[in-house]
Length: 127
Image: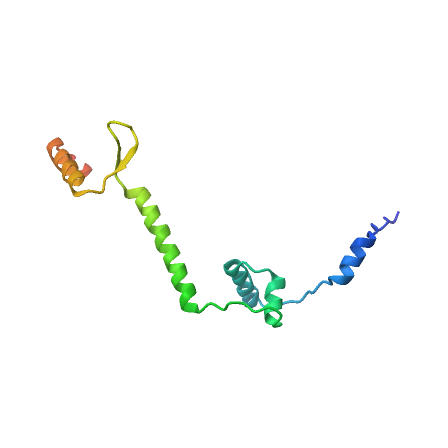
């Protein structure tokens, strides 16, 4: 029993005729570079082909600009994640909203409290 092929609608046939498929093989290195460009620039394969054929102009960003942008993005992510881990906070005595320790006065008060409370290293307590 041979299975009947699914018939294409006239609109699909017309679309495929006006938008033919382009297919070709590339090296892994070129493929990886293509994927990187697509991610970094938000371009499709069609957009990249149009640029290569000179049909559209693209703003070519200098490598230095791209590196600086990536560095700044990484720096900001690092600062934010470090801040989340290392920031000391406490609730406001009146409204209960979070306050981040950032003034010298607060740091001195915390230091004074810790010393007066006898805090020490965990390993120092074992001796």
